[in-house]
Image (cartoon, rainbow, N blue to C red; front, side, top):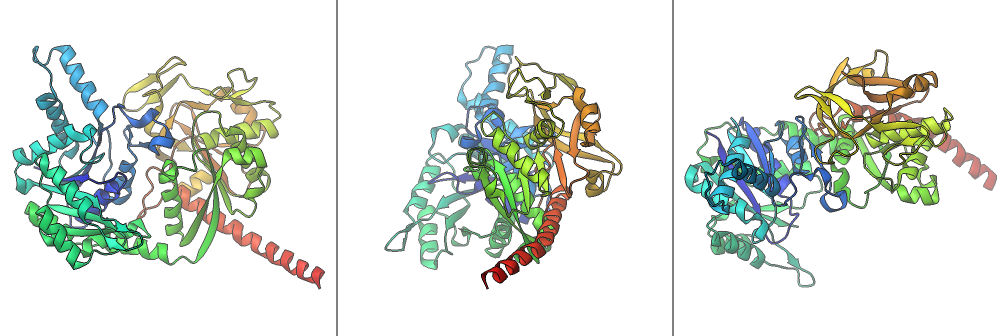
Length: 557
């Protein structure tokens, strides 16, 4: 039977429960345990697929096609676990299932209540997510004391009783602030947060205290005394300059020993060799590059968190410091591409809606015409196709039907039918509800012989994750091929997955999202190749820059 670690948060939101859960999972995995990861979200949305990036940040897509919380991305980057449809449950999804059962008559006319019906469904979902793991990390979204998360908290309280306290660990993450001016460390918020948790019947076993510096012994002792937590289990969750250091920081404080002892597990010592190698490679690059990310939501960095990390992973694999420069596409629309000068590579990420599209197209054109390495992802591929159609093939006002239904050249359009390996033929139309009508999850892509994509991946067939409604319109395929664009990847049912420009140093764009499966330990071949291309471009520009500087000096003399 799996054991469970329940992770809750208090005082304020966004303390880093996801990274804390993932880091502990990584340490336990390094002790030979099979880990499962589950996230419970208190919002009413059935899934985050239609939520605004400004409010929610990134929507992570699992291999099985589940649109989920961004914390699942942290899980997959830290733990060798593939998350899926049983790894993320929202309040909306739980209530949807309970109501469906009530409509079918499964409850035999009983009054449906939060206790036991909602809590029973939550417990069933947690056990389903745990599967056959040794230890299942269960993160409860929201903050202790919020009304939205109370059913989840009640459910894990019940599980703690039903499974036995030797099979469950309750880990609570709190904030220990420092008052400005006096520099005084304040433990009261943590005390009150634990008091709130104990008031609903949960006694934490471990406290992770977010703080700028390690907690002094006096404060650790005080927190332990007032919260009924043993002193060794009051852990300093420090602000780290590198998130991949966190597993080692927590291990050094004995967190995994506490959990292993509490769960009565017989396991070997922790081996964090892989993580030390990651941190060392990141801290000791032998080169650097400047990468421009031209996006629509750059003011909310969580919108591109998997992309940010995938670029960093590419840097780790190639011993390169990757400096990511964020450019709002609407600014480029208004002021032109001058800000992109000096960049070693340009990346245009995904997105939806018409805002900022023309600025992204300008960035694509700048990369294409100036031989700057370019990587387009999802919308970034679609805009590369639109840009090429307008400025190379002469398809005036070429566009996507997402942005202009009356375009004379709909080179990007909604695909109404596609093949899903798991469920067979899938269909949609303009009237379909947005939620759940995208082409989602991992699907096979055949790579063309001799293509850059085939060279980068090193194989003929790959599996990559998708999340989109609009795709390349195949009626324009021959025209684009005659005009010099190469189509390097196709789905099994003939949809365009990868486009390239053979006469460009490095120009590649994908309909799928390669950032999702990228990890710090394994990287991703596409991002590693992209960063290497950026380094080559930077090296090629250095003699030019040096010559220009010398000429300027001579002119001044």
